[in-house]
Image 1 (cartoon, rainbow, N blue to C red):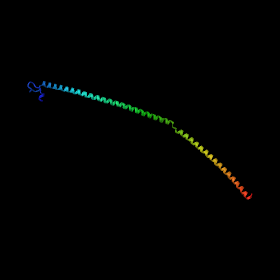
Image 2 (cartoon, rainbow, N blue to C red):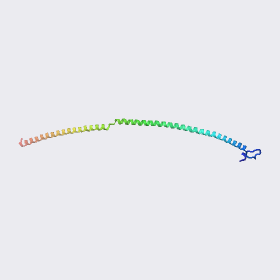
Image 3 (spheres, rainbow, N blue to C red):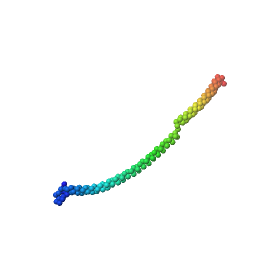
Image 4 (cartoon, rainbow, N blue to C red):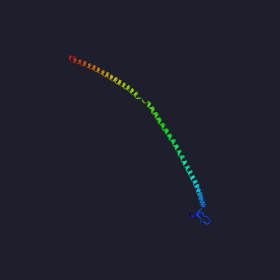
Length: 158
């Protein structure tokens, strides 16, 4: 062991004794103990600062998360309200649509009425055509009678 760490008796040449070793160990233990206490207090202070910083960070993060959640909930509520309104409009529109069976019935009625109108128009056209034929026969007959009278007039000389 180095000279400075030796515990000597009267002349400084003696070897370590049991008591001197115990005394030296106790002193070193007390010194180390004080250093540990000092380091321990610094470590505690350091850890307390870090813990408070982490707590503040977590608090800020939680606050931001709460705000974000509230905004997301508000946005989702608005979106769902819009979807529900659209769904209600579609339901209202569906209720106002004409059912297929009702359309087919109405379409059949309109088609039947159009067919009846066509038949009536054809009948009117046939009457006109028939009336025209009669007039054609009357005029042809009068012309024929006039021609016969004209031939008789030519042959008789009058």
